[in-house]
Image (cartoon, rainbow over all chains, first blue to last red; front, side, top):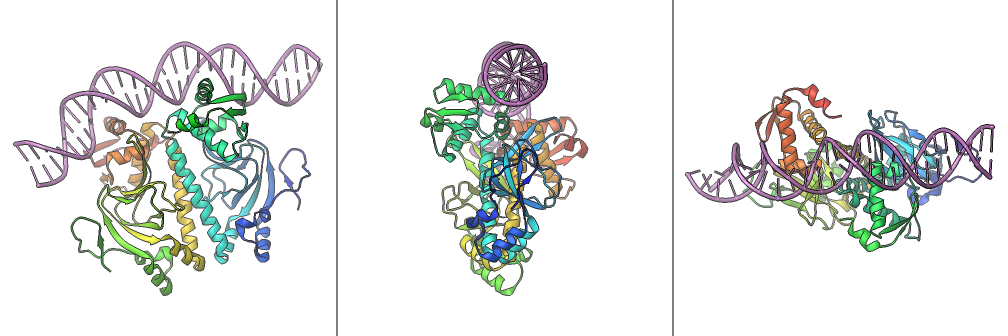
Length: 230
Length: 230
DNA sequence: CGTCATTTTGATAGCACTCAACGAAGGTGG
DNA sequence: CCACCTTCGTTGAGTGCTATCAAAATGACG
């Protein structure tokens, strides 16, 4: 299938589709064809490009194929809050009628568009699909609640929790690479970039981490990092 | 059906059940019977009683029949955060395996318990039920996102948004009655009771509202109240 | 009327924001 | 290859908002 290029140079790799996530949707052949019919893309977005704009009709759901996608709201005064990051495999965008939040690429990303109405119609026939949709949504809800709880903690706690979570999810390798900009992390944690920077500096001074570059660090003291999460 | 009294004096009124919410679950007779079989209660809880404890197995979902229920987390140092309030008609509690948050009565409340596994099994056969479950969950998710956004605003903005929302939802009558304690509101808004109290006092001084009693206010200037929400 | 829980008010301190300037990294054109 | 520019991140100084601690006031209830 052709890869739609929103902008930028062409890309020769074969791109993933919903059909590459059979565990998500079940694997019956008729089901596969039905899903294929209502998907568009995957479309490639460069960092900071808008995937769906606030106020836009919410006809499609989004399935992240690669990269990182943020769901956020920008205010009149220019400030911005990020409500969630989505990683490859995540399906989201259940607004009714219109999107309240905008959806943007936090890093170069590929996103599959899935017709909302069509997916719902399939879900009404295939209980496996319905069950998957409910599971992902309740999972999103749980993460949103965790995020809300995090917003009532100190800056050091928020940053420690974010870094520790990231490190765990990325496999605890030698280097911890930040997949998004400091500005994005700050907006996600409800902090300014200055406070984020100062907090990381403080952690480095305390010997918890080391900065290799602005986007790459090393966790030196996991125990102490986890203690800061409380 | 008998009304289970958790504690306190008996209550002679007939209590609502899931069967009183046919719009929610569809109204086929077989469906009704199936739902009836897996519901327990309604059970009556007095204010501040625990309905489900953090760490407990999440075998049941909760349907609020009357009153107000809060979903919250209490920390070692005694501080507490409320993630959501649930009102009559709300169905919630989709934790996997164990509850991460505790569920408590924020005001005297009646709650219907619905076996999670049974409901899922019905949903797999009745697409209407599955569709309803998805709809309520996505709605919860949207509200949680709104709540997260609110946590990044000033105290006055948070309180104004809470009061305005409450006033709208309760029908904009002459009196605005607070259904929960100041402590609960503060924990929901991520503020201390002192800051909440001072904020309300400030609003009263500005002529936005009038305090009739601690639990009852009058909205004097709706326009100005809405301006504070930004 | 007394007791207890809840709310309000006051004084003070601390944490994160704001404003400002500097530094580092990456891209572009000469 | 280097000078230039732009973007992003870091550091510093000062302010402001909200939390904390303390105490008084109000209201509910027996």
